[in-house]
Length: 256
Ligand code: MG
Ligand code: MG
View 1 (tube, rainbow, N blue to C red):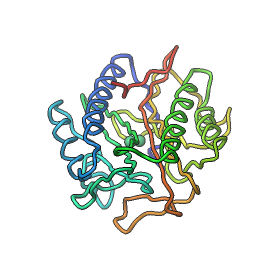
View 2: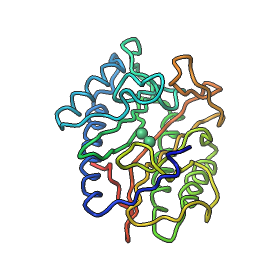
View 3: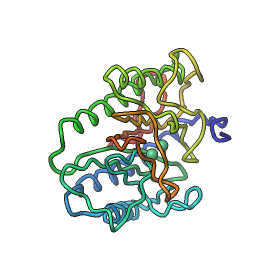
């Protein structure tokens, strides 16, 4: 992939702008999270996200992205849908669903990229466990975002956390550098070998995004050419933060 070769180190001033873009992203996601209730359509969620983005003078890099152009500002992926679900008036949330919301926000020429998965009403213990493992895998990955480590240390931490609990990570979709573009280098798979890959340097900004499946690592894409689902129809989850490497602690740019 061409984007994976272009690594842009951000200055302190650029990181401050990215932090603002990330904060807007976080506020938009919080707005959408509050709406996850039975009877709400995924198109309603997208409309609320667009309104929140507008309030912050921001837009999402998702709209118009790729081919066929993605038609919305967020992705809404329900249950067996892993990523890239297209918001629709026909998809009405019901009690027990789990929904992944992925959103981007552009501000000051920089992109924030973040996602979470949450339940609608009461969810099964199986679903709750999947959400916990995926969110903790993201934490495990972020903890490795330190000078002296390599991208493979982050990937291996995610893979080890997930697989040691009996779940699967996708092989087809990865984390990525993010900055003026939504996708930059380095690529950051959710599996890999510790000590391999690109050395992490201060000013690198990477979207870390574990995508976890219960029954299989296999996925397929629906006929809408976007929605990625688990091949066996089992539940999936996805959490993502844009994170900067610093001289010290990793800096989560898309935290509230
Ligand atoms: Mg994302
Ligand atoms: Mg991403």
